[in-house]
Image 1 (tube, chains in turn green, purple):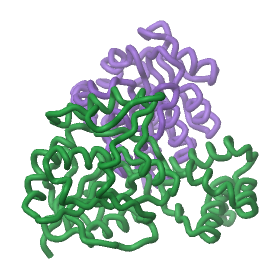
Image 2: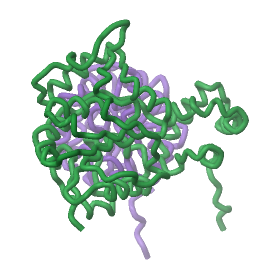
Image 3: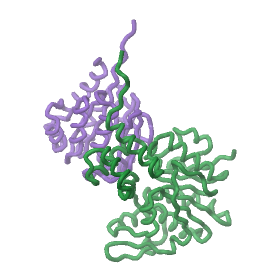
Image 4: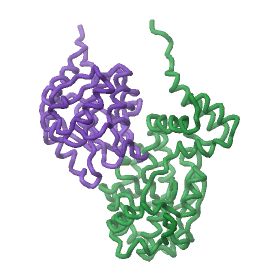
Length: 278
Length: 192
């Protein structure tokens, strides 16, 4: 006879913390991929000076002001503009010509975090002459990340990488046309967010809010378990009309999801998919 | 009467400067039923051909990992450039763009630590040539959870810093030249 199944105490601690976060505040991390989430929970414990995850849970329930800090750790905010230039080049050369046939275009940047992907797309659309008839929905669960996205201010020491990436995306102009530099930061042109709707939206708990022509959601699904990935992909499927486009991160794939049947490869190398007719 | 299936053995391997030369000696000797996850520190923009090069060295095919790909015997799973590679408890890989660790993304420590947690005594960690200390902390975690640790003999490594750091963290690690590491890893498949 074997002993009753017992959970590793620190597996249980993470689970209880996530339950507390969900039931107290409605943020649902319960179906995030556990290996990387656990690392971020530990980082939060160290930063917030909690000896155990249980202590962090107690503080979360009794000092709700630490919620913002905890969210900052649990959501990943490391990004760069025009990350994987080939993706943006493929959008520029192959996807935007399709979108240009519509009188108005809607784009959903799902899990936009601090906005690097959003500004990359806004610049791309401006360069290709589509910006003025496009609406961008930029959504995230982290209000601080959304505020950063809305501010559009990035450390100047990243601009060299962003500039190199931008050039690799096939841009004719210069990235410096879109920001002003000073005091160690680059502030991106306010006009770039004139057509952006910033909004709190969770791929884990919210529903579709609009029909869009392009969903760009890069390196967000990697933090989810498969079941949650499937939920997010279902939202994208429902948001996209026949022939709508879905762009994922360079190592994200539909091939492990039942939702793959709703899409076809459009650019396999760059992980751009197209919604099939139903 | 049933014959015992080979004990599952999950190899996690890391290396940096000088490790491709070691892999050229190690990979040809591996048995094709091994499961290998590999982190190499390679500049992101030069890494795209890595899987093809490694696969051509020996019997195991090599592939750059896609997110949530299952970790199965019969292949070398290579961390994609600019992503951390993690092993999830349900034996799938996940990827992460979190900040570099010890200036490295992918990080050997992160692969080793998550594999140790997911697989416990089923893990064999291997550290090859390299010029920094990535891998030492992860190897200690593998050891603490009952897995085995192997290092390339520092005298055979182009850069001995990485193997030495692992030996400091895990004094009982098995130390072998690359060709013999292959033999030792194959033997794990037969251990019951």
